[in-house]
Length: 392
Image (cartoon, rainbow, N blue to C red; front, side):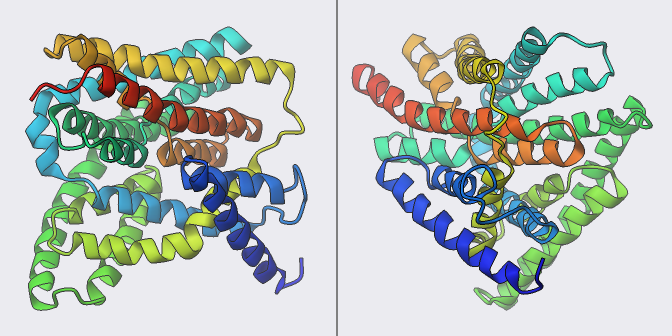
């Protein structure tokens, strides 16, 4: 490849991703859907204008790190505390039921393999992809409906945030267990040690940033230091604890989420992510997706994947909501609100491909799930809220 050809690739990716992103927004779909489709069209499967390179892979990795850092920054512990144990129980069900559902779906489609085998971990990973709830899509949907601040909206939002945290932890465990040289106890110990380390570092970092925030309020050095913390924790998580780098990036965001300038940090991070790294990451999903090997078997699996992923969220979260004291219609609202999938599902799938737990042709079911859930959730929630309005 010519040294400067990468500039042309980047230009094509940015223009195509943003162009298709705008089209997606006009069609009331999430912009990331358009960016993924752009990658699919300009990639080897369709036009062949851009091919995956080591440079683009590294750029996409930075993109996913920034996305997870911003997700952590947008988390509000106060909201989590308000909804308390109920949101936690709903989130646990929102992870456990889809995890089991995805595992059974893969086993039913391609056969059940022995515990500890490659096929076993692939089945578990399919379930892991299903665990993620899209906080951004859920929030936007509830905001448009005017129910973000209600009891149901707060519960859905808090449960979705906790859901993603648990999903990332599950991802960390699955990746660790996949390595035959690693004992289950080692994975548990390294995970616990990382979070103990993160709490210690987080306490110190929070105090430092709080002091810096007072001394240099709204100065660009604060986001610069925040980005440095994100990259350091991402590196330490992967290098010294054997944990996914995105976990470290997410934790860095959580550490800074209650700093006074957290929104300012997120705003500055969003510029780089929106302009360059985000489009590259989402387009890279399309570049990796292989539709030429999409068979009848994979089509049937995709239909099952979408149905199981949506129903498991509604059933799992809905039943636990009932146990927590919510009434019939409200339980369904919570279940439907939790069924959207977005960036985190893509991030998990991307990580699975990198460590050999997922094949490229499985990106198509994930993308279709994101599109279907992103379109279906707002429509169903609007119908539910019109028919069963919240009681004041």
